[in-house]
Every structure is written in C-alpha cells, then in structure tokens.
Image (cartoon, rainbow, N blue to C red):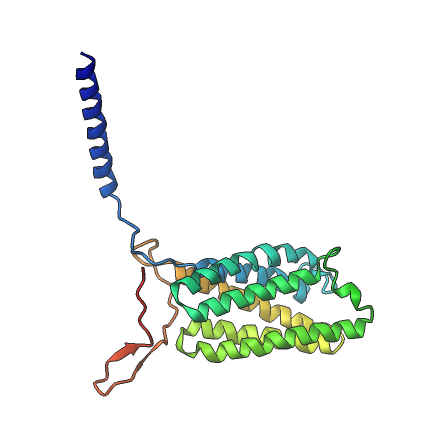
Length: 246
C-alpha cells in the first residue's frame, strides 16, 4: 500500500513539473536579449547634473550656496551607478559607452570627494582661495578637454548624444572660465543654466534608449542614428561594426 502511495506521489510531482514547464513556456524568454544598461547610465548622469546645475545657477537657492548637499548623488548615483553601467558596456563590447560612463563616473566621484570632510578634505589643504579657484579651474579644464574629445568621437553614434555632449562641453567651458576668474558669478549662473538644459537632454537620451514602441511603450523617442554611411559603390549602408551578443 505504501509502495502504491509512493508511486502516486511521484506521478503527481511529475505532473506538476510538466504543468510548470508548460506554463513557463507561455512567457517570452529573455534569453539572448542583450543587456541595455544605457538608460540607467544616462539617467544617473542627468539627475546628478540637474541637481548640481540648480545650485550653480542659483535656482531656488542662492548661487553662493555650497553644492555639498548634491554630492551624495555625485558619489552614489552619478558615480557608483554610472561605473557599474560602464562595466556592463565594456562586457558588451561597446568601447565608446564604456569610456563614456566609466569616465564620467570618475568625474562625479572626483567632484564628490572634494566636498567630503574628514578623511579626504582635499580643499582644506589649499587655504588661499585664489589658488583653490584656479585648482578647480584646472579640474574643469581637464574635463572640458575630455568632453571635446568625446564629442569628436561621437560623430558616428546618434544626433541626440552629439547634442548632449555639445552642451555638456559648453557647461564645462563656462565652469572653467568662472573658476579661473575667481568664481565669477554670472559665468557660474550661465554654466548652471546650460547644465540644466544638458540634464534634460540626458534624460531624453535615457528614456529614448529605453522606450520601444510595441514592446514597453506606445511610442519610441527618436535618437537619429548617424552610425551608418554609404560606403560601397552599390549605395547600400553598412554598420560600422557588428558584434555578436551572447
């Protein structure tokens, strides 16, 4: 009798497993679908830049208010999350976006660390304010040069990213000039205004990279792909490179 019950239990377990397999087969498989970390990376940059730029522009707070309150985002959202996204892009073989996200993650980490008191306290080691402003100017000058190189390198990506990097370049240029002129307030406000506009474009990039008509939304936001060109005599277009997604 016990042997019969064991057989019945085994049969019931098997039937449940078969039913589970059948039900799982009703759902579309995500296997083979490539990772898409870009929406997270763009949004992390955009939100962090938006908050930082609001302080620079003096919007809702005096322009002289320290940006220290925005540095939590710089460290843990614009910094840490973008670094993770950059590593994912490196795993996918997209060297441009890996360079983009990992580098700007370093920017936010570096900027955030300047406001951390105690163990870092980098700015406390330079007591002369003119020297400190010039040091900040050198910091932003380096990122201005890097952003210019990224803008040149983005010529074969998409129009939205090119526009984003162009306005980010203007933001850095204004920040650099402001600090070299002993924190000139009007230039600082202008950099904040351009930074806010750049953040909006960054959000657009993030959601345009995420929303797909018919898959997860009713519309798709255009990025205007410029990665293809007519490179053969037949007039057909070829992608720059083809990568196998695993």
